[in-house]
Image (tube, rainbow, N blue to C red; front, side):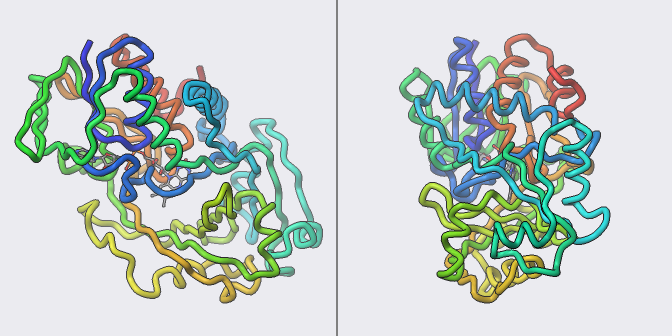
Length: 368
Ligand SMILES: Cc1cc2nc3c(=O)[nH]c(=O)nc-3n(C[C@H](O)[C@H](O)[C@H](O)COP(=O)(O)OP(=O)(O)OC[C@H]3O[C@@H](n4cnc5c(N)ncnc54)[C@H](O)[C@@H]3O)c2cc1C
């Protein structure tokens, strides 16, 4: 079977990888470079962690996510996960950090609970007196997205896939299995998989009721000199508690340290809108982290990157079938960690036709 994959973020690359392994004839078409720094998968890193609220289903799926990444590392001959674990800090009863802790407890997943004084001693960048407790889990870390994308593009080319960069798809005939590029060229295949991230609504505006697009930004920072060593050895900070919806990735494998917060996202109808950082934006993001991070203004903002992503109302992933085309949107701000597993599942559904089963899995409604 011939398959065209539109979009080479982690979902598209992983789908192409799995389709090639299944013996299909694969073409992947990307509007930018691979990785594309404007894509949700194009930043330096994304967090993998077992923590999900109790009952979400995605916490259980992490086992499959790890298994799929290991499968990928074996093919790439290189491991792109820094497994430094993750830390959460609870500041208020019932905050997100607490919800994640309950999810870990319910799933029977181990973690180490720390009193504030113990946590501050171990991670001196935390401000004493600003949080109720912290907990550490070894079951997480940072996935290095750019190395993953470059490695996958190399692997695809070496294994017979056609990989086109700087080739924007402007129209899809879902019945004929036909795509049109901005250059005017056309391509044809038995099936088309669309993994266009936040740009999907430009090709499938009818999904606008289900998918909402947001623009956000992340601040890369340089920590105070005397805290550098503590940060180098720190876990990923998955959640800083309260209502900040804030996470931090320490320096890992030569990449900068970054701060991101769900509070900083704004709705937009266009994934290309406002993609230049606004002056002062990095400092605004950074300052959301005090409390519980001490001496926040001593963290120097070195770079700000913008991102666009889509969310469903319940933050689950979705698939939509139209003619010979399968649209997959696995984001809602937490999809990267499942990337390799999503690709394997999408490729399987293309092979066996079980799109209903794929939809259930994407919604974390089935466990194996
Ligand atoms: C700020 C932020 C933080 C996040 N943090 C985490 C995290 O810590 N952990 C986690 O698991 N997930 C996280 N996520 C979510 C994760 O990044 C996404 O779920 C994942 O990257 C989505 O991958 P994708 O391939 O679906 O989309 P994308 O990565 O956006 O890829 C889509 C690709 O399609 C291409 N494309 C679009 N339209 C066309 C076209 N017409 N023609 C050709 N190519 C096209 C784009 O250029 C792009 O390369 C975060 C997301 C954001 C924005």
